[in-house]
Length: 201
Image (cartoon, rainbow, N blue to C red; front, side, top):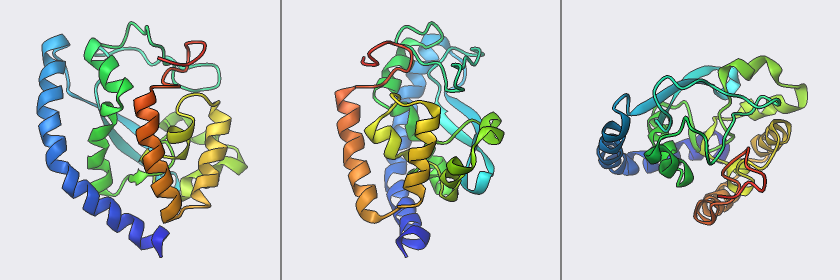
């Protein structure tokens, strides 16, 4: 009941309530992005959704326009505190996770959930092992189990396995725990960067 109906209803109700806040934030963050380097306010990229379907995910742009995509050896996204591709406002919105808020649009559209697995890059679809594919049983989330409890401290393999575990254990109680843990993780600012040694800001 919760997994197939209630969760989606909660997503819609909360997202519609938050949407006016997103519009205000869009104006404020958008002006800051435009002042610093002009260019697009939103970053759009193809991601893997429920059942392996590809959708276009939205974020506030945190990098300079036309920055190259750099990946680590395990396929994870290169992410460093001193990454020259990241703008000044981009660093701030990343560390506070404000860059993720435009995904409210994806939640309303039905591409994503408020809480779910991290949405993976489209080009990684064919790299999933059998025991990782359960991750795609549910919609990806703005936040989720791995983001809340581990952020960027895990390997791609471990993230996928934990996301698959979440997809098989979805419950209202678990989602509430993830929600509050997300708030704590954001304020503690730990495990933000993948490529910075101790992984703290």
